[in-house]
Every structure is written in C-alpha cells, then in structure tokens.
Image (tube, rainbow, N blue to C red; front, side, top):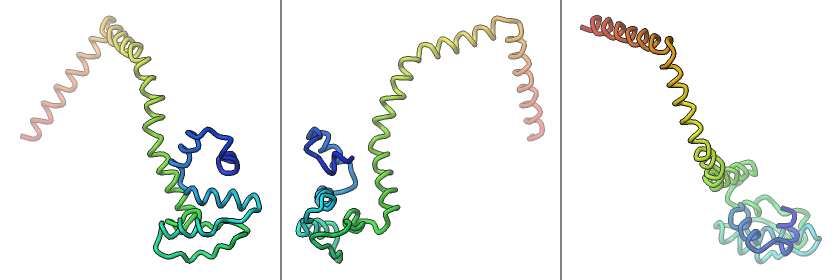
Length: 156
C-alpha cells in the first residue's frame, strides 16, 4: 500500500486501477495524503470539490499545509473510523468471497469427487457384505416399525 499511495508510478497501471476501484478512499484523498506526507502543499480546491460532490456541506477546515489529513476528508460518508473500516471490510468481503470461494472450493470438489464417491461405495459395500451389516439394518428397521406402530396406536 505504501507504493500505491506514495509511489503509484512504480506499480502497473492495471494494479493501480484495481486498488483505486475496489478501495474505500477516493483518488483526490490519496493524492492529498501523498503530498502531505512528502511535506508539500495539499490541493485544497480538489479536496473541496471532492467533498462537495460527496455531501451537501463542506465544513472541513483544511489548510494548504495540514499536519494530518482529517478523517472527515478520508471518509466523508461516515462519522466514525470504526464504522468506515467495518463498511470497507464488509464490501471487500462481498466482492472477493465469490472469487476466492470458486478458486478454492470448486477445484477441491471436482478433483476429489471421484475419491469421495468411491469411499462411500466401499463403506456401503463393506457394511452390507459382512454379517453384521444386514443384521443391524434388520434391527434398525424393526425398531422403527415398532416405534411407528406404537406412535400410531397412541394417536388413534
């Protein structure tokens, strides 16, 4: 992220655009943070224009050489940094979860599907081939039969 804010020319344009598009902070704010960290003047006109486009009133007092860029400039839509971070994390999760889910879970299922089916068929066959398997089925089915008959008799 340091390279994105302080030296964006060092990153490929596609990566730079991706971060800007998916990130929760606007481009004029990144530019103001970069100029502020380098000790240069902040373009107050571009920040004011950005804030006016985001909300109705512009009550932020921002000088040309501020000591820090205030939170009301970084996230003008929310009053709390915690709420802004929660909103950004939630939005990022919603954007990235389908991608990462499809990249990890889907190949796992398709690559191991045959092995799972084979495992379940082998378990079924081994339980039905030995003498205890069918006997346990008979006991289970007779128990269910008796249970349902007694339940039906108590209802009638």
